[in-house]
Image (tube, rainbow, N blue to C red; front, side, top):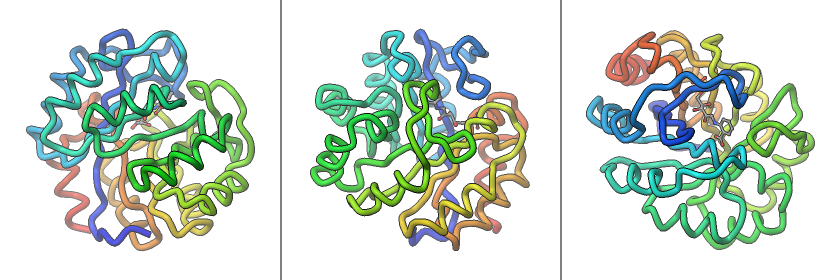
Length: 245
Ligand SMILES: O=C(O)c1ccccc1NCC(=O)[C@H](O)[C@H](O)COP(=O)(O)O
């Protein structure tokens, strides 16, 4: 479990075809574009973010990659960066870690090549997080398009392998501004002692306060995407709201 008492906020920059975008339910083709990923990342940094959640959606979907741009954005940051999307083998992991990011988030690999994931967890420790992206309790890989087994069975296996942290996304909520799935997060926290980063659905400062209320259970951080781009609140307001809980 995390020792931090204030919920960490990770503003998201999801990159598709060189642009910062947000998707609905993570579905390819539902993109709303928000311009330059570097400008977006710098704006979150200026607003006081301590973390950036940076996703290469093309790498996740297998429609190419934005590797050079992702490296450029990561190198421009003075803050911690969590990299996600298409990190599935030695080459993509080496490229991700070479950007100087703080940690990477593995998704599909944890479902399809568990032996490799166990090996890199053993090698890299808390530089590796695993994304548990679910519909109901079924995990999804390959850009959230393919079933990948049961959430709790996979969580038990990864815990036994020493996985340091989980990024938990309810795909039904992602990009919808419908609020996070607090029940799912509580259930995951009850099933593991490792810190959990919540992702998907944040719509308001009250959602963030509710997530901050789960810090004692093991929720360490929250990824915020659409709500910031849609200007539901500012990052400054969000940081203030979670600091007051
Ligand atoms: O993270 C991935 O690898 C990924 C793969 C395929 C589709 C989406 C993916 N990530 C999306 C995110 O991490 C979002 O930025 C995050 O869940 C924010 O959601 P929201 O606040 O609801 O916009």
